[in-house]
Image (cartoon, rainbow, N blue to C red; front, side, top):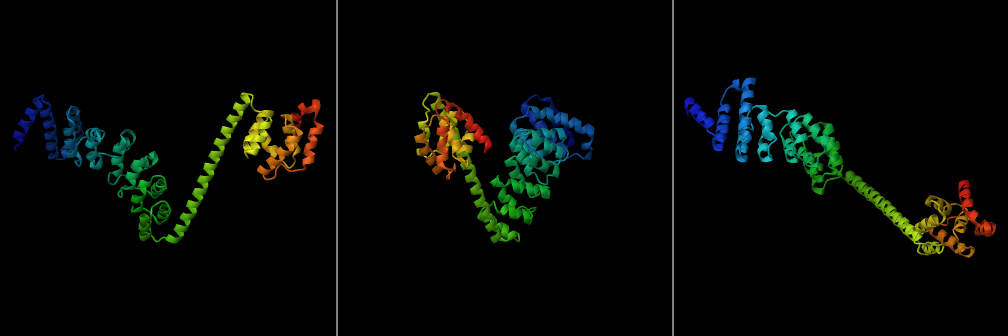
Length: 367
């Protein structure tokens, strides 16, 4: 087709107000620009082309915008404003531009990582030969899907520190482990760390690629698993104890509020082998803290516990049984002679019983 005929066709399309003709005009302009020499890179021409294309793109259908993006994906002549607009478009339109447009610079890619959708960010992470500023932004954001895409990008300019960060992240993000095990920038030291977290097939790949001691790593892995399980059990046990203590506090508060918490409940809790419930009940009856009662039952003398029990109405006969049950549940504590403890009931009798609570606190201070 001659230049004159092309000009006539473009003029006719430009004069038409039909959406289809305007879309044909846009694609025809793209084809024409691709054939023009370096003069098209001049700032004035770039500004004019940007204005024209953005005006046409704004009203174009999805399929036309996608066709334009595919034509411009590898071209170096399109105005940056146009390419950035296509890169921020729907992912089907943006994908070819993000993947290969030479017009997109690091700053443009970083903007996509910050402002665009996860799908756009994944495309950025998969783009060939992305530079350190883009890689650092991905690592700083720490989005799992984008990190996984970066782990699979063998051409990305990832520093040793960045690789170490990816390997550490793979402890939580399992999808990263397979691409990292085969990554050309993975070091022997990093491979040994990764070995602990991957499955058997990937371990074989790591052993075949790096000179590592598989037996030593397996032993370290077994130890790590054992420690992790023990730690998990400790955490679960602590959580369970905390939940149990909260339930017991609420139960005691409910009984106390209903007027049903009496000294006899202390023996009942001990006979049910619920030492923590006994502590909460005694604390509530005497207006003591749980820590004060715990200190009393852990003391090396039993008279302190006797003072607490006397102050809430536990009689002399019941105290001997109560003390024996506490010692059974608390590794023999509180210590001391029971006869000495029972003298509390002689020292504080009649009108002086009310002073037993004060004496209890003073005895705790002296311990």
